[in-house]
Length: 160
Image 1 (cartoon, rainbow, N blue to C red):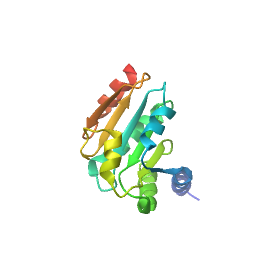
Image 2: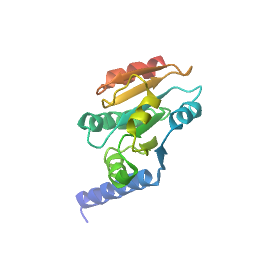
Image 3: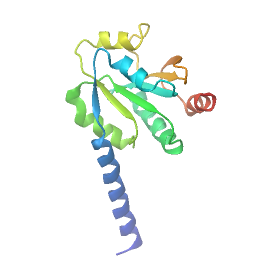
């Protein structure tokens, strides 16, 4: 076999490995009380909570940004909440695999009354996506609407 063929086989195996890791991740149901459980679970540690959807193009670009940041910073804590539904699980897993998100806490809205879930996350958030919250170790958060750039994440990570 040629080197090129071995390289192609290696890429395929790597892609399968990444998709296996993503498919093995638990996709948690985000319901009333989930936000408080997330914040309590990360108490004392800085983390990023990013809200996204399959139908949001800037969200997909942001997932790519988070993927690169996770690879460079293994201690980076990322929580992703999809505003889609549990019925979208196959598509959610495929999107996360495509963007190589193999190490994050993954949630999906699991209540038909999405406004209630959005209100639980932030009373001043009206559903625009992407929506990102930067939490410092003291639990103080800063919310940002719209697509992030690498500089914003780098600045938060350096200051955390």
